[in-house]
Image 1 (tube, rainbow, N blue to C red):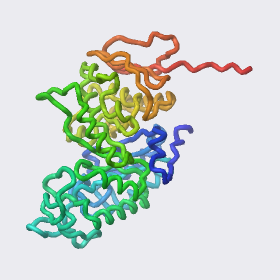
Image 2 (image 1 turned 90 degrees about the vertical axis):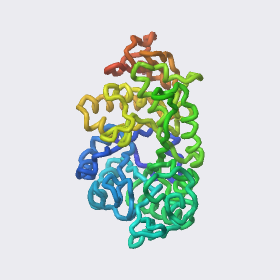
Image 3 (image 1 turned 135 degrees about the vertical axis):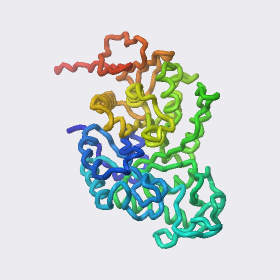
Image 4 (image 1 turned 60 degrees about the vertical axis):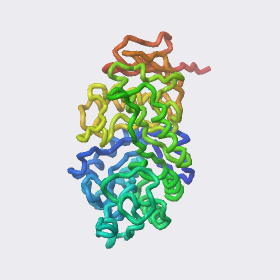
Amino acid sequence: MDNLNNTVEESTDLGAVLQKGKEILLQGFNWESHKYDWWENLEKKVPDIAKSGFTSVWLPPAINSFSPDGYLPQNLYLLSSSYGSEQQLKALLQKLSEYKVRAMADIVINHRIGTTQGHGGLYNRYDGIPLAWDEHAVTSCTGGLGNQSTGDNFHGVPNIDHSQHFVRKDIIGWLQWLRCVGFQDFRFDFARGYSAKYVKEYIEAAKPIFSVGEYWDSCNYSGSVLEYNQDSHRQRIINWIDATGQLSSAFDFTTKGILQEAVKGQFWRLRDPQGKPPGVMGWWPSRAVTFIDNHDTGSTQAHWPFPSNHIMEGYAYILTHPGTPTVFYDHFYDGDDSGHEQIVKLMEIRRSGEIHSRSSVRILEAKDNLYSAVIGDKICIKIGDGSWSPSDREWTLATSGQRYAIWQKKAMIHIPS
């Protein structure tokens, strides 16, 4: 089966997967997943995940946490969590490995909940558990005795001081251990919270196959209206990527913010003044990880949700365009079967049309009710209510759905001599 050929590459070349640009990620959870036997649930889905063509599955934080969702970590070396036992996690990792799909660990190292009270009466010591740090591991701005933070504060909890050598040494040891456990990719949570130069150090030491950072800050708004120009927003994400030594990719929050307004009948937003895609994808596509929603923006938190009646238009866009697309669990498994089938079809078209993270984009139309573009030289897409189709006879309809259609170039017929 050709779509099981996503071979797991144990390469010391950190850029090997980035160079190829053929990744498609699945976010394998939502905000409610901790309420279920999640590792067991995912293990049953691994054959379908592999068959669909995903190369990596982003898993929720797999370690002991003060909160059931995993985002307030405490004992980093305890693999028992609300999502399941250590044994269930390892069974899932083994199954993913068998099916040649990589496991992405959610790396939550901006903050850590203490076990005992220390300086100022705050829980900023970690006595009695592995990595038994004292208050010097916590930034002074969040109640510790360490240095000032090198990024933004995650309020209400002790933020880790990555400028301390002993902290970085311990984190590197832990990341290397996660690699031995069976995680091959990393997703860095709240990447605004500490300097990207430390992410570079961690990637160089632990050698994940693929890394992505969550550098999420607000897009540019005039009141409640999204501004057309989001260059300063995407530049901040690009600066973060650059500061990782270009070793990490980043979630393209700029594209998400623009796309979820564009699909409401403002497709002019999808072409920047230079005629390129307006997100990180338009400036540095090989490092842009595109997505429609995640556990924060969508799911039951719904902090910044994609309009629910336009989901497939969103996937038609990101799965045919450069960047590294990510599919959200809810859209793939919690909707009706047709959503799953449409996304799988779009993924097949991406592969057969040889679309990769650096594919060229030639935007043909970008107006209120219509967007159309040629991607690479084999795929043509139209999104929106406006009537449009390619004029050349060399194009044939590959798939269509509500408010979108995709064409592929007819294969050249080779007549044997």
